[in-house]
Image (cartoon, rainbow, N blue to C red; front, side, top):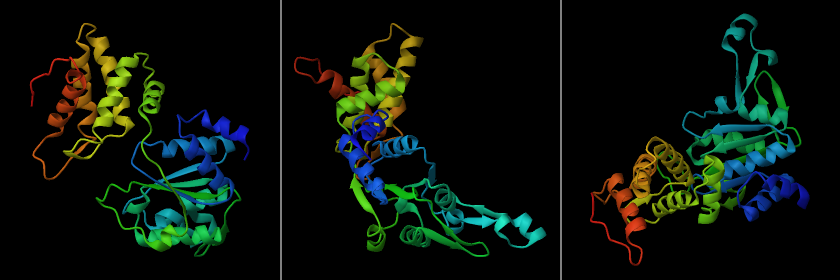
Length: 294
């Protein structure tokens, strides 16, 4: 992997220069990598950009309680088994075997939601670059096969503690939120919006949800993308609408499901978002302070 290849891959990613270089170095060295950080921080985007440049398959799996070893590895077709008995021909590959045979990247989202016995199967495949399937035999991985995963360390609902033995198999990269400028560039790219003031307002409100004292969970950049996209449509419907009011309506719609109010607070998502909006538009020096609306 040289600098020219890295620069070509970087064209598909906004920012993330250091993180992209580190991920590239890890996968080029034949290592598996765990990306740990909040949602909406370009983890999947980086990995997809690498696989597209290398022209290798990208096999996506969502980590959850239903990701059993059989779902991950594969199973024998029940109808064909009844007619033919078990054989290699009626084995249906799961995402792990598919990625191994095709030399692709197996990407597991929310790794810490997967059951422990599923992780044990995964770790065996990572260590040996092969997996043994009953009545099929041992299946080996192609040279470009990698196991990549992501997890959100701030979400503890439905998650399990990752053991030291699991961590020991991975190269780990902590990924945080991008800068406001980079998030603005992402919003512009995803929405096609050319109104920089609207983009800046959407990004500012979204970023403010991450530090508000009454919220335990703020919104990712996906909230800003939806906020700006909705605001653009509202402006088309009513060209004369007040800009700040359009932003509020779009924010309430785009952000209220993406934030989590702290259990100790009696606030509603709508009230917190409205407060953030008021602070953004009416608390600047010399600005008129708006009365609390909720």
